[in-house]
Image (cartoon, rainbow, N blue to C red; front, side, top):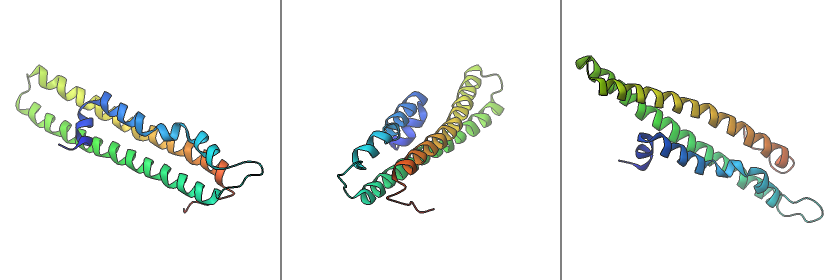
Length: 138
């Protein structure tokens, strides 16, 4: 079983993985300030901003793919549990498992919205700090 799928089974573990992956977005201002110089010293700001932009984009793509894969994995689990429930209508444990998977699916869908907000914030900060040096492709 791939690592991403293993993380999907345990939502707390999944959130920890996302938290670790989001670290670069959390410190984006410090990262940009450390490579985009102010004052008289001028490094290659265009190359630095391009590199930061690529790192930001790669991070967003990885996280979005992870979230979407987990949504797909959990959706399949919900479908499977619903089929099982049709055959065993009085199985209390099965009903609990189904509700737990449905709850996890809703929380994963919320993570897509969270990821969109993080991406929006990071791009806004990037544009504020790097717009003079690098114009990202549309």
